Length: 141
Image 1 (cartoon, rainbow, N blue to C red):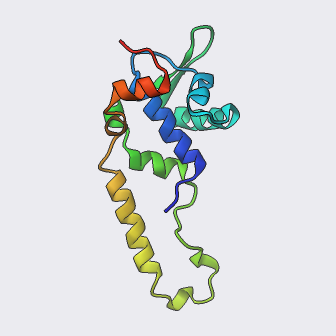
Image 2 (image 1 turned 90 degrees about the horizontal axis):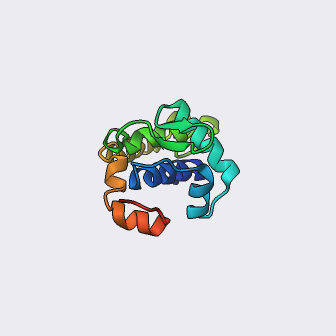
């Protein structure tokens, strides 16, 4: 399975915030760190905020932060949230779907993929905080 750019960016945002949990980050800062589109990142952050994964603080000195501990944000949950379609193949429009023996193995593979991601949290992905902070150019205590 290939994750969409939207999911990739969502995971990057969460890892960025987990790398320096004691500070607010801006969308512009995150976009610069990863060299990605700020406009697209705003859509990603809005979705994460609606799902209560990040909190936003408006105004001067505002920014975004994790809305809960990184240990409580499960990667599989984020993937389910951000991936609009979990079908590995377009079986719905396929002529042979009613008799095809591939549908079951693909469903099993998708469940196994998500089960593995369910075993990991954003904290696991950001376990090397100091290294991540250095790579992202974050000042941490």
